[in-house]
Length: 429
Image (cartoon, rainbow, N blue to C red):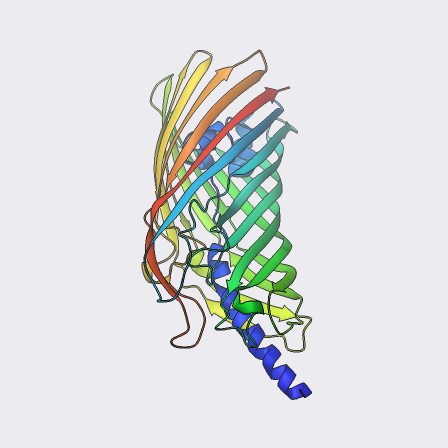
């Protein structure tokens, strides 16, 4: 076999693998508004832009830190429990496999927030929290395994911030999130599609391992006291460039694929949200919020192999749309105890015809509740939860391959929910 023939085979093999992994960017993540604190977890994120009472304001809205009169620490822990079950209604003839069962994996996410009172008007904040993530694990025998069998993305952000009280009504704030992102993905390879075939005619396997990146995302905040009872809060987060670099491994292929690494680039969207907090009386508070996220900026994605004889590059359009959300929440305090409830809605970032199995999201409804109590002179506690209802997420996806060889999977998700449970402790110095 001459060098030109080898190069052609390698090019064909890598092209098949490249177009097999294209859907992964659809699962590249979603912003998480719940960060384990009562103001976020107990109000479906509605209280975030008008948060002036907790150290988590260092991340939710840095201008809100000026409402804290003492140095404060928040420590939290939340567990994310998804249940994602696919019900196929059509699969290309000859394709065998399971429905994947519950493809959701539990995640434990700690968080930490600190606010220091530098002067009467100036505050410094520091937060560490998981700000986005997601994943599915259908297993290697999944009916749609040639599109994806497993994908996981997580991101954790270290965010220093400052808040400044301009006058009795207006406060402003700014910060920057230093974000570590990691992606891992498995895709099974169809023996009928891979040039040279696979060992014993069994599925091949592609693994992307430890694709990581460090990025940064600036954010700005403002609070304005409209009256003695009403306050407006606004938060803007800038777009963030993500440039993942990871290892590529393939298994069970007859011909070697020499490329051993991959670069995956996309942009996390900029966001804008506003909130209104209105004190009904000494015990009850109404909260409203609305926002926009530019997920259309997330649509263009570049993927490139390296380290091989040939190193294909592809730019794809995932056809994501901008999203909007709105919510309402209510907070009640009674002596040393308090409760919050919240509801919010978020539009779908993708149309039914473009949705893929690695990100089975539709429009999302969220229901939340939290309970707070005072444990001592300087110590408070809270527990809460948020239920995500993520729609039936209809799927009509065809995996790569020549006509008559490519596999089509059609169906929807009978169960597509996620429960987040968490608890926090707050200490004031």
